[in-house]
Length: 270
Image (cartoon, rainbow, N blue to C red):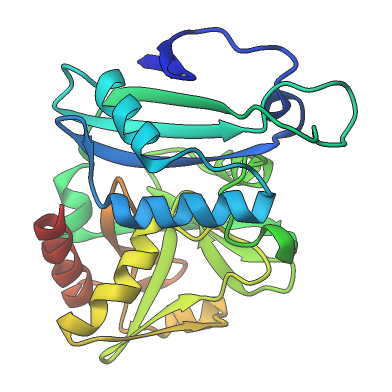
């Protein structure tokens, strides 16, 4: 893995950095091809929205793009993790009045998911952990991810490829590392993320392109029973594209027309 901090190769972080001390920051994960981020427009929109939610200065897009190209030199197909913290500060929760944000870019060679995940679908675990509500942080991919860490510890591969998370009221919210879509006829539904959850770039992409594929999209409150009753269900993020769900609790699916169509469009867009 290659790591750059504030535009230079580095492996050490200031111990007073607020990202380390308080999780005061955000991150995004994306795919690079020959140094260029795929679907950057959607990633950039989410970065800007997350920075606004945290009242965090957002570095210029050109700065990110230049550093991504430099950090990934020599890696044709790569995964990049972009982390932005509020930077170093004194003890205490009060944020600095003039923060100096820390930019971290980590580059790894991409390992493609198994082809069978797209052809035959994946098994999804029903997580016991419940997500708490915090509307001020809803949608933000902030650095406080302990709920996801604990949820991910509930199962081990290869039995399940992903886990599905509900909130404290029992509404389905998202996968541990992905967003959820279900299909009812020609309608694609995704959970509302106004109280918790992460709004991913792939989710935003679906909302923009689904109409051209003949689907209507809606954000909706979904129960596990709604997932079980769906004609089709799938998980998405910017690295995996769209994984059709083949098994969730007692339900089985074997036909994935929407996931197949979205994966084809995703490949063409990338």
